Length: 73
Image: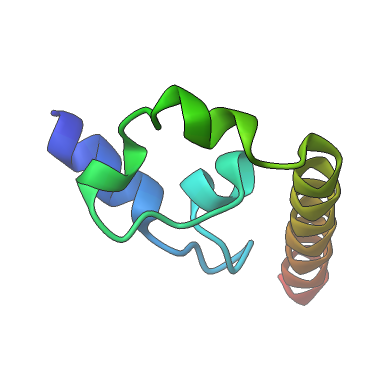
């Protein structure tokens, strides 16, 4: 079942134009190993405010795509 879950969450959806994993985490994993936890030094090196802005922008794009598809239907 985990393989099916990873496959579903990596698939780009027609409505949002993003995969569910990308909407939640801000990147699309290329392989299941990409979803493993990062070493502690990797967690400390990223700028949280930049990451939050990036994910918020991604959410805005997904919302716009959903609204476009809703109007089209």
